[in-house]
Every structure is written in structure tokens, then in C-alpha cells.
Amino acid sequence: MLQSKNKATLTITTKTNKKTNKKMSKPTVFVVYYSTYGHLRAVADKVVEGLKSTNLVNVELRQFPETLPQEVLEKMHAPPKDASVPAFTLDELEAGDAFMFGFPTRFGTAPAQVKSFIDSTGGLWAKKALVGKMVGVFSGTGSQSGGQESNTLTFLPNLIHHGMIFVPMGFTHDNLFEIDEVVGGSAYGSGSFASSTGIRAVSDKEKEMAYHHGESFARVASKYHS
Image (cartoon, rainbow, N blue to C red):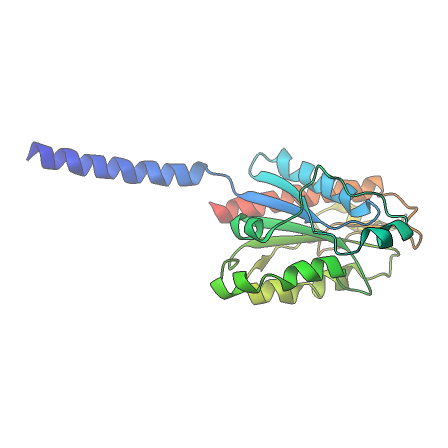
């Protein structure tokens, strides 16, 4: 009888430990950007800072794989990619708990580099591997009427077909009500304006919103994960 009681006690203890370990684990958020001239990289860096500031999630920075030949990039006067940031992979998409994707707008929608990556996720779709994973989106355009909101809206069908959960930023930051200067971002997510020539740097207010975007996303993802 004593041996049986000890076994029962051991079983209960093991189950309790498993439950405790699950609660203590942090979700891993991949921040994945595509940036030709560095504007979206600057936004991504602030998003990462915001995520890390909460101490609620683990954070990994990645970039979408480039699809343009090097000779074309040189003709575009695009600076070299940061070799210290690895290219995002399908394995990481399957392994991650949540994601924040950032990319510029090409005629109101995502650029070919992002579309190419998403088009390669058919195997994950067949396995239902991404169902229930959370996603936030930040964007960039050359002008204030360049399509930051449409960029996110036209990206949503990709998430919907995978059963992923879009997490908007909402009107949760005062800079979204700014009327004294042009500021990127919207209720859909943070963002920046680069001007048609790309000479405008990401502004301080845009960086503030990007930080807030990461911070707020971490709190939602952590709550959902627990």
C-alpha cells in the first residue's frame, strides 16, 4: 500500500512540474523584415527593443531572403545587406510562436521578396503548422498616400489561409493623432515614410511608435501563450 501511495504522489508531482515549466517558458517572437535602403531595418530595430523591454518574450531578428541579383541591387544603389542578420527560413516559421513582419510597399502591397517567401509555405499550410500563431505587421512607403494600410490589408489573406491571428496596434499611441508633422504608422501597425527618393530617415516619432508596437505585441503574445 505504501509503495502504491508513493507512486501516486510521484505522478502528481511530475504533472505539477510539467505545468509549472510550461507557464515559465517564454514565447519566441521572430521579427522579420525586408529593407532595400535600411528604413524598415531601422523600424525593426526599435520593434525588437520594444519586445525585449517587456522581458516577456524571446526575440530573434531575421530578414526575408533577397531575390534580386546583386547587379540589379548595385544599379539601384542599394547598400549591402547586414550579414549579421540571418535570412529567415521555413523551419523558423514553423518553430516560432509569433512573428512581426516588416516590409515596404510596392504598389500598395508587399514586395516580391516577401511574396516569394510566402508562396513557398505550401508545405506548412498542408500540415496546418501555422494555425493559431500571432502576427503583427509594420510597413513603409515613399509618401503619406503610398499605401501603408493597404499593404497590411492585402497581406492579411496570407495569414487567414494559414489560420494565423493578426494583432493590430490599434490607436494605442499618441503619435497616431499627430497633425503637426507627417508620421508613418496606423492602427494596423507602426511604419515610416522614406520619401520618393529615400532620403527621409525614420523620424523619432516613428521610432517611438515602433518601440511601442513591439512592447504591446509582446504583452498580447505572452498573454495568449500562457
